[in-house]
Image (tube, rainbow, N blue to C red; front, side, top):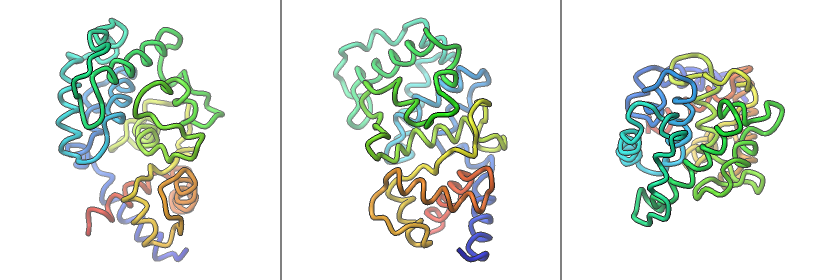
Length: 237
């Protein structure tokens, strides 16, 4: 790849990896908290609803965040979510409130066994597969072992593992930013195709690895900083 392309990507990433990014992005929800377990609970639930229109995501995020009364971890371990068991009214898009119950139940089981969600992940394993193993019964959590790009999970991992302290929170210190993958959806795929970073036709884990490998040459040790550049390309249209 040309040095001009690398410089262009660096410039885009610097333009969008700024604190002003937070207020219009779902990452605003974990940013409302200071304690590690509050942040990771908020991040896990926020990524789960991060489909489609950002305005609709943030509206639903505010509705769920209000349930926590300023303490997401306490909400989980106190079992307040149990009232949503078998509740079939709509929460968001194809999610029912019972799906939210299942997600909270899975988080509850994690915290029964581990001090934090981070501790439930083997630092030497595939981070997305490690997370999936604890949430495989939850509607909307894709199985990365069958080729899913697991876009929302890798987005959450970016929030929790990257440590530059601008947009991403970097509260998980046992996992390596170097091993993160670009969160790939159809829009990121389209921008990557236009840049010549991939010729693949569908958003998959193979595409995520291919794009991330290139981004590692642009941002050594921090490949997913390139996510801000790909986001910027979409916005700049």
